[in-house]
Length: 263
Image 1 (cartoon, rainbow, N blue to C red):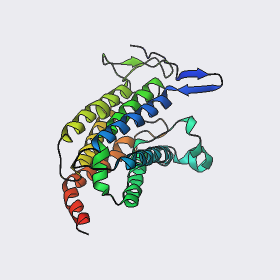
Image 2 (spheres, helix red, strand yellow):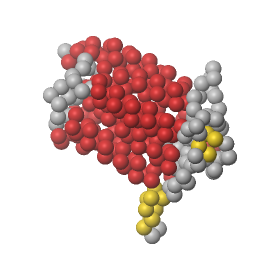
Image 3 (cartoon, rainbow, N blue to C red):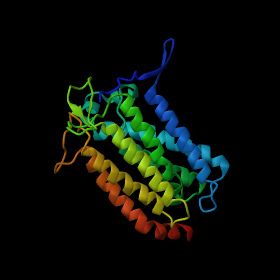
Image 4 (cartoon, rainbow, N blue to C red):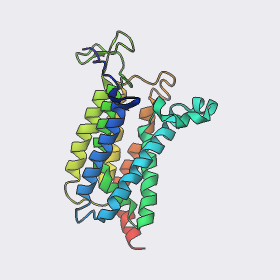
């Protein structure tokens, strides 16, 4: 198969160009927002209707700021040091999921404190919806022809002419399927009925860490980073604390929530 060479510009209105990647982000925020609104009506995850838009806006801001700062810190630190203003040039590309996750967590902490909500319950509310956004994001990576896979002789291999003439894994599609669609189904299935506080968020964190780590074996490491430690890519290395955090929240979250409620 050959990479379809999709025009990254979806709509051109005179001097205004609307890129597919931007549309994927829009679809992610809208889709996650709709799922959050639906889940917030459940008796075990109540959230006042007036707070939903604030929650979604806070999360979106956390994704964008955290994603950009995380990319510069984890993947392009030397360039950031040499050019501090590079962090502002988002149009040049470069977003990190792990940085976005940190940004979202900080945004949710501020949201929970502002509205006197439980951060653990808020996390359980939004966690199952995140894979939908990830799926759109990875489709955006594929359309943009970025984050391609390692060379392969697999029948699933694809030639990316803008890279070279080798067959490569379409790892963006693997990630859209794994950490996107499959994880979405898994999290929504697990969250279909009330669970102890923290367990839904824990399942998402553990699931993402596992799917991301597996996909990294097919994804070409960043050329300027390569393998960072003991044969791991940066994505795999950053997923280790995420896996441990998911396990801890899954096991200890109910007790933490009970402690917070008794204060």
